[in-house]
Amino acid sequence: MALQKIRIIIADDHALYRDGISMLLAKEPDFQIIASAHDGKELVEKVIEFAPEIAIVDLSMPEMGGVHAIEEIIRKSETKCLAHSTYTTHYSMMEAIGAGAMGYVGKNAQRGEISEAIRAIVSGEPYYCKASAETLSKAIAKKRFHPSFHNPSFSEKEIRILFLIAQEKSNKEISAEMFLSFRTIEGIRSSLLSKMNVKTSTGMIVYALKNNTIMTY
Image 1 (cartoon, helix red, strand yellow):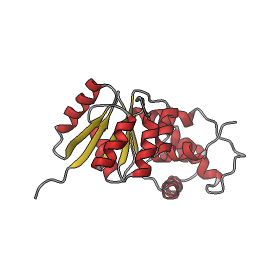
Image 2 (cartoon, helix red, strand yellow):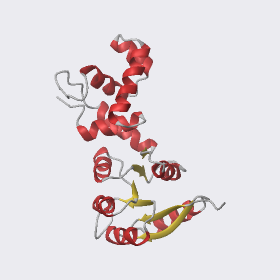
Image 3 (cartoon, one colour):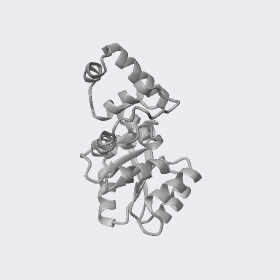
C-alpha cells in the first residue's frame, strides 16, 4: 500500500529560505511539497487551487501579510496553517493563533520541530515549538494573580493553579504551595484540560492568553 503523504505549501518571501525548507521537508517520506508562494496573496490562491493539508505561513510577507493570509485560508478552505516566523514575541504568536493557525514554529526552532509540528497539526493537535512555548509561559508568568478577578467558567482555585502551571511549577510544587493534596491538583489540572478542550500545558497557556483568563493588576 502506498504511503499517504501530507501535501504541503510553503510561503516565504525569501526564496533562499523557502527553498531550504522545501528541500529539508522533501526528505521526509510522508511529506510532499506541492507548491510554494512568495507572498500572502499568492499563497491563498495556491491553497484554493491545490487544497493541501498544510500551509506553512511566514508572518512577514508583502502583498498580504501572513496573519491576513491565515484568516483567508481558514475562511476559504480546509487547509490547516502552521505559522512560521523570525519573531517569537507572544504578540505575534497570539495574532497568528487568533487568525486560526494551529501551530507556531520560530525560524530559530530546533531541527525537526517543523516536521513534528506538521504531523501534529494534521492529526488535529496544536503545536508550539519549544521557544514559542517558553515565550507564552513567560507572558503569563509576568502577570500577577488577581484574586478578585471572576471568570464564570473557572473557579478562583482553578485560575490560581493555571497561573502556577504557567510558571512551570510541577504538580508537587503546586500541591505544597496551595496546601492541597497531589491527587487534588492532578484532578484540577485534568479538569482544566477538559474545560479548555486542550491536551497540554502549552495549550492551556494559549487558551488563557486568548481568553484573558489571567489578568494583571
